[in-house]
Each structure stands twice: as C-alpha cells, then as structure tokens.
Length: 389
Image 1 (cartoon, rainbow, N blue to C red):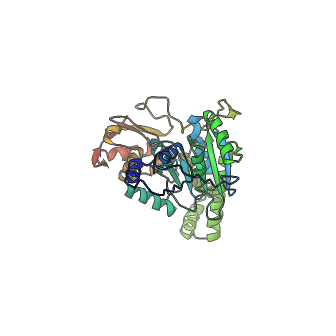
Image 2 (cartoon, helix red, strand yellow; image 1 turned 180 degrees about the vertical axis):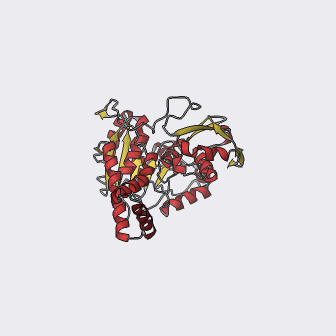
Image 3 (tube, one colour; image 1 turned 120 degrees about the vertical axis):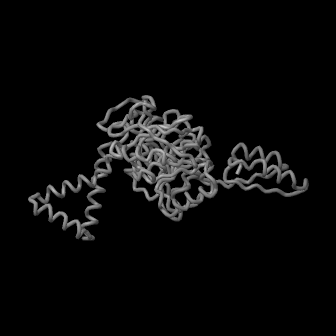
C-alpha cells in the first residue's frame, strides 16, 4: 500500500486515533519505509518474528542465467520457446518496460499483455481476467501492479530485472508453485546484478543454480518436435477429409505424395519466420564475448536512425503522425493497425515512439494494406495518418 501511494491516507488514519490505544502491525516483510512508519506511530513495540529455515518454498526450482542487459529480451524469447509454460509472469522494474516488452513479445507471436500502474482499475481487472482464463500466456508486470495477484496456474516467474530488495524477490517467485504444484523461477542476470543475487541467496537461505541460455540449434529442434507432435495429434483425430480431397486432386495431377506433404509442412512452418531467434552474446563466467549465429539479432535496439529503413529483412518502416505527446503507446499502435488493416498483430515489428511521431516496422507483404487505411486509424479518439518512412 505504501508503494501504491496510500502513505498519506495511512498517516491520516493513524493521526486520528486516540493517543491511548493498542496497535498491532502485521507485515510479511519489514522494509525501511514500514519500519519508519512503525517507529513514528507505535510506542515501545514488542517485535515478534516468525522465522523459518528457508524463505523460498521447496516446490519452486530457481535458476539464473547470466546475460548482457541488452540481450535480455532475446534470452526471454528463447526461454519462452523452450520451457513447458502454462502461464508466465515476467517482472520488470519500470512501467515503460511492461509496454515495450509485451509489444516485442506480441510481435514475435507470444500472447502477452502489460500490467502496470498506468492502467485504470477497470482495464487492470480485464487484463487479469484474461490471464485467469488463459487467454494470455505471458503477463509483464511491475511489483506494484502485481500486488494482490492470486492465480494458481502460473508455472513460471521470470525476473527480467532483479529487485533491489531481496525480500521482494521472495514475494515475486512465490507467485508460482502454488496449490500443491511445482513452479520454476528464472532470473535474467546482468553482470552488474551478480552481487545482488548473492545477497538474495544469503537472505533466502538457498542456492540458485546458474544455467546456460538455450542455443539456436536447441530451439530449432524444439520447434520441429512440436510440429511433429501436432502432426501426430491430427493423424490420430483423422479430421481432415476436405484436406484429403485437396491432396487427392494434386496427386491426380501427377504430384508425388511425399512432395505434397513436404510442401504442406513448409506452409505450416511459415509462421516461424515471424519468430527469428535473437542473438545472445556468450558469457564466460562474468565476462562477455560476442559470438555470431546464423540468426539475425532482431531483439535488440537498432543502432540506425528510427526514421531510416527497417533493420529487419522483409520489413518496411512506416511513420505515424502522432507520438508521445499524444499519449501513443506501443500496444495502441499494434491494436490500431492490426484491427483496421486486418493484419496479424504479431507480424508487426519494432516500434519507436518519438515526441511527435512514431515509427513502426510492417511486413513488406502487408505494406499496401496498411497504407491503404491511412487516415482511418483511431488511437485515443485521434485520427492517425501513416506513410512510408
């Protein structure tokens, strides 16, 4: 409640209570702000601490991955592909990160939404309901916005940034491993956060295993395994009569059945082009060195100008005539373009919001559709024009 801005209300209530009273304070943690509040309004209090040998529950498997700060988004997308995730909660430090990271994940085909203090209470409840109903797989949240979040089916908690307070870490990972289930907590650890992790281990009384980031080859193998499993499911169901008729037409035209199957799989895998594997620099201990892969680094910020050509192959950079001064946010851009131009939201690439204008990467194949709707996009009751940058 203190973090959410209720300190003045709490003080007003306490100042209105009679001088002769009995006051009890219960708190799972006692950070400095709460201790200062207690010392101001409590007289010679008796402190009772209920200790336990280990603050973090045994049902949660804890891991840490050492990664460069600028490579965290790429690392997160790799983990989201490799882990068996029912639902995941990703903790970030700032409200701005909730929007930018969720937008980046959506553009790569993940069902993600932000949860931050910028949302109205009504919008917050709508987001949480979608998460509870598993319409959202990944929720990007700040510590303040996640207060009171009580959902039993969260399989993973990701610490995109380590909290400054070790006890906050304990509360974060406690969002998984509930209702008798096991959970996994993974921390993306930049080199300058290394000492903070050791402090968390000391306070929590646990050892956090340091593991390696999944390799591109492992991710490609995972994708193929998932594709084969989906194929086996459909073969067991035998619900493809119309598709069989289409294949028979092509067989009658002289095409080899194996060639037809390969072509069909090629079409089925076309969505993988929207999920390029971001580059992550290899870390040796606490030292960093750059290693190249055959996959282009799409998850980090472009070093080129925002108004220049797109840095991704097959994408076209476009410019909107509204920006930060007009209250434009990444999710607004994705929603408006996807709904009005009738293109998949996950196909939209990098978004850069300036003070008076916004730049967005659009797949080349969708460029004409997006431009054709220029002037019809509405964001915050504002009509938006879009042109090639």
